[in-house]
Length: 125
Image (cartoon, rainbow, N blue to C red):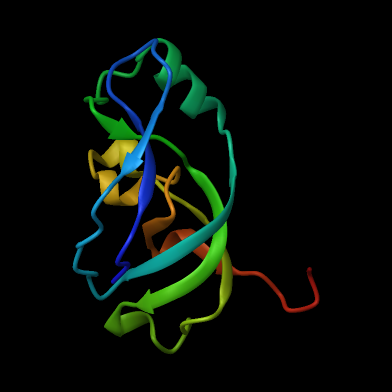
């Protein structure tokens, strides 16, 4: 697992994100990937939750971020035929919707469901 991790936490609606060290000791399920993120996109859901918290299933504090790309660090057992460490992927990180900070995209190491990830072809740089 990742030894050091920083994340952009949202402690409540309508305030700036707070970047701080965040332990990452999550054990992967057989269907998950651990991705070292390299780029993020700001999804409309991210700024809605950051600004107004208008979604009833959102609880704070949380780590926002849905759209990420990066490099796989670890692979859950049932996904080893599809993915391997070192693969570049893009993924949807659904941590804020699921109430799981380890799955929020605005951090260095992100847990994602393999079904919500796809490999980036080597021909794309």
